[in-house]
Image (spheres, rainbow, N blue to C red):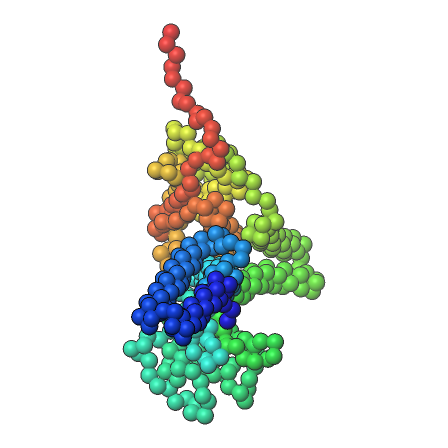
Length: 488
């Protein structure tokens, strides 16, 4: 430890005074009391100066601690605490640097954690919005996460019980305690067990959710890292009820098409065979040719109807919706059907609203739907009866009504009236048809124009079809004003 100059000087002075005091006593130049007094005075003076110097150095150190910038050159050499103070300042600066680095790292970590939390919240929100159930199990096969759509497949804790399906298989609490439904439990077991380990397995099962039974498809996938170590298992559960319904409808459609095509083709084949046998006279041959022509016309109508329906449903036919006045479209449709009604002596009338009914529709498609309804009404209404076309406004909707006093539809047929190829058995003999007209009308009204269509009917009293479509133009236009008589 270094001792600075002024403190060396004090030590030397004290030694000199002590030696001088000893010489005075030895040479009898002064008495013992005088020598003691001189020695005491010199010691007290020296110690007083030492204490003052230390106090001054301490105050200087305190000032420098409050403001290190006040530290002067030579401070370490002149100050008693200089060396210690300098080392302390150095350590403080090193600690401050480390602290700053630590704070920077801490800030970066906080920012990264916040970013990860936001991403996690975003991912969880996205998964929460899915209609597909997601269940994630960790490497120990314990349930780590499930979104709301997967809740129906989780068994409440109060209902969980121990399962001993396979005591040799050390699966998770999620499986052992039946935390998931038996269907998912079996799927997980097959996916995880070592003997038949596979990356992905699937199963389909029936399950009741909110009182409704439906079909579900579950796919379990083992998650692995780059070293093929198992990270966990994810199970995706999807409702395939609608998919199965579509498959069933498609199968029914194909079956119906085959049946509808088979009937006229069988008739044509029979008539052709009769003609080829050569056993028919001229009159019978002409009659058979007429039957063949009717069946060909039936096939043509059927094919055209199927093509029109397929083109509209598949989007091949471009939907061109624009702003129109509804009554203009209804008048055009009425003009097309009116001649047919006149031929059958049917009283055809229109009762259209006096109000301006603005609609945003595809004029051709909506017109075709109205023509189909009016044509059916005329076909299935006996001579001398009545067909009526009406329009009105109800709140924010335009209502179209096609009513007849014809044959009517039995109650058991009403739920199927819009099905493809469905024809009312009792009315088949009254008019030819394909059973696709009303299906096309239903699609145009509900899918193309976001409307609704309903039917009411009584046998031998008549039928009423009611169409409701949204009211209003897409673009704001001036509404037509009812003309008022001019004041003369």
